[in-house]
Length: 157
Image (cartoon, rainbow, N blue to C red; front, side, top):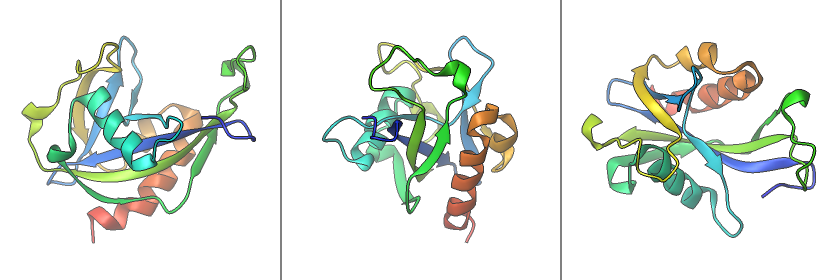
């Protein structure tokens, strides 16, 4: 779903373990790491999209996580001009995301990066809370910082 301003509705997932480390995954075949995220389908709530993406991308179901909270509003980022697909209609210039903060209630053996036909990730690891801000592609850095800042108190209160 792309809104009238050109932003695609999306969810982001910040998943922590009991030590407060965050799930960090490498995009398949690339040296690019990110949090799980994905688009919201028409007639799908952000919460339902989050659970669908959680399963499709890392193989976890609702029984493996507790939802701790989410961002109050959409957080937006723009795609660099050279990456915009100008032939696509409607034109997408970026993403608007609701970020969810989850805590793993299962264990590491519950992860399955091949739970969908087209796996998104090929590796994962637990990282310190602020590490993703340093490692994420430059155009997502500000939105990662905003999401982590807003949700930090939910994990470390």
